[in-house]
Length: 177
Image 1 (cartoon, helix red, strand yellow):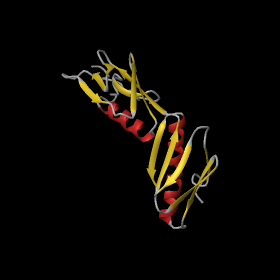
Image 2 (cartoon, helix red, strand yellow; image 1 turned 30 degrees about the horizontal axis):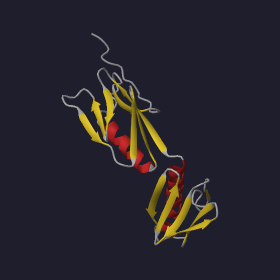
Image 3 (cartoon, rainbow, N blue to C red; image 1 turned 120 degrees about the vertical axis):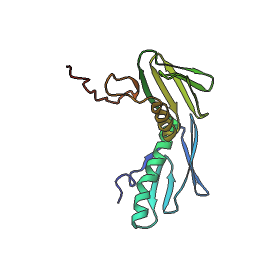
Image 4 (cartoon, rainbow, N blue to C red; image 1 turned 60 degrees about the horizontal axis):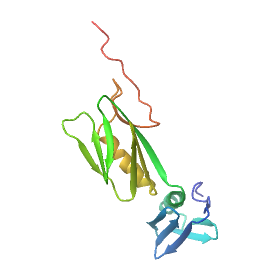
């Protein structure tokens, strides 16, 4: 039995889960999300808990069991609390600001970078810190990765964009003559 899949998901106050036509729909105070349900897995809603069961015991069903449980748990957490990722920008002249639905980045290139912000995501900028927030965990992570990919941290001076909790291993420069 899957250790993750057999755990039941407890629903916080104000969160509703419904299974309709092979789709799991989660609605809460911050919004609503939906996920296609794999035919090898079943979802049962019992009051304030959700249980994920598998149809058979073959390898593919076992692998989807834990996956579907984790996806539904992330949807429940997203519509009740939300997700956020913080990025730090380090470097002389490196800066970011938000204007409308566009994140403008100056990262030492000959041109500024204009990143269009998806509708489901909100981005706030405070000096050298960019905070990406939303209810969809996968989308928050993807947008954060896209922003970081514009200028990853280089190991010699530590300049670039990094996650707030990311450790950068610094290299020594030239040893001398």
